[in-house]
Length: 323
Image (tube, rainbow, N blue to C red; front, side):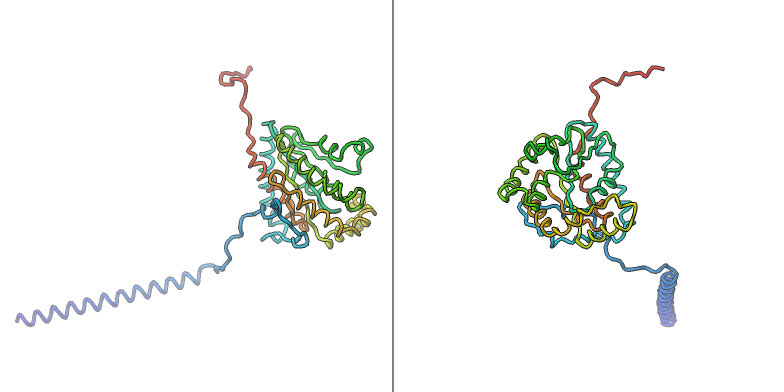
């Protein structure tokens, strides 16, 4: 009798184990089926690369003593951006940064910023000024364009007319062409001897150092376009009546000297990019990318300067506004 009961208990235990195993298998099968159904119902998942890196515009900065070759720098590059619409939001963000920092610089009224723009004809200096600085407070920003020296200017040393236009405290000043014309066009056109324009590299470096010692930060941009892009822009000026005012037959003469000018630009950049007044070679075939690079680089420069709103000299705690 006892043996029969023991055997019955063993059979019951075995049956329970089998039932648990079957239940587990059923649950696993159901789980697998539900996962499959969920995958089929879910939207297609694409395998993508990591998000593009944040802009790294110091890559365009020429290090002191570095010998860059303009021919090795692609003027058509635009990082991961492909179209103008790709940079719209980022450019608005950088323009807003620039506006806010410029207001602080103007309010602080202790330091200033000099921005130098150089390029070949059609390189985009005017467009850069329009799109990068269009939103800043005009009270705190000045633009100076340097053309053929006047009789008075020519009667002084070559830096005299540029020093007259250096920014006063609180201001951002943009040089549309600059003191570098006196190691560029004068070299290409052989207006001075090689000894003279070579010595000017040293003079320019000392001039810019003097500016920085007087609380003027200096940042310089070469807007780098290709020869093919210049031809396209010149052709556009010819074909569009609204752009005829921009066209000059002299541009065609200057274009014939493309290689000479690029050699002169290259030597000036290599000899005059310093820690205190760096050169940036900005790929500028794509105007929208050029604008983004320059806007962000200037905003970063101002942020590093860290201008501050001044505190009031008066005690304002108990001031009451009269009715």
